[in-house]
Length: 349
Picture (tube, rainbow, N blue to C red):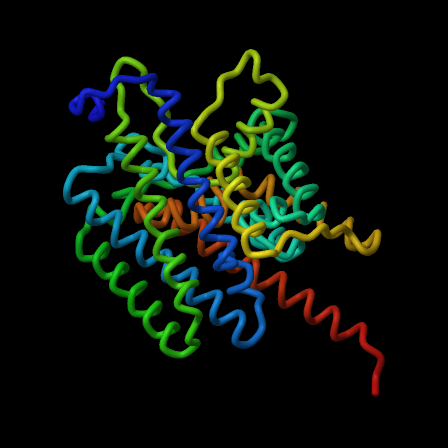
């Protein structure tokens, strides 16, 4: 463990929990200030949607560039991580991504955004998170697990699991992300503070990967290599809350707690705390349906818009990039269908 080189000794698991908590705290503050959410970029209207896209793409561009830099200096090692596997569960990723994208439109927010909102008093978001965690856990280890295993068994073999194996592709994608970010910033002129928060958010996944894979590595007490995400962390948090006397906290538990704390503090300081609940029964059904879709979809796709879409894509994982594309497509399609349905319901003039 690198910390021992500097004379620091500690329990690796505890250090991972602390790291998760610190990253979550920073993410919560930055995401609350910037309103970071890919759903706004996919379904937002006019300038608001374009500015949300600028924030999200900037975070992704920073994450990819930072990960490439960290890999050059040997600060990250995902060689054994599922994101870099040569066996691609293409059917599970595509179906899961489409489901997650559809779910985030129904709930008006991806899981990261809903986590932030729940800490500010949004009871709709809080209930969605509970249902999401239960369904995701059922998909991982419960009654829905057989379907997950069946879909995940349909794989294709890849010549490489990450674009880092081909530097031209890696640097090309990084350059493309930077170019799109710069173009969106020039056109939409988002708030400088929001863009600063986007840069901070973009650095967090790489710090997570570096911390859990290299900096805090303890060969005698190995811990899972992971970064900021919300699907697995919420299932871990649910299990920990129910049986904390038997199950120790993990990086994910620390992360979720940190995001909730950071979002609350930020919203309180900015005077943005407010209780909000459901307005109608149909709205409740729509939100809970979206939560279930994201619970199943997040597990099948290998992560949410942050776990796969930001942290996974930062590692230039083929699986994560495919999941991100599927999520965006699912979101665009569902938003189109909902908009068309709403327009059809309007009375003729």
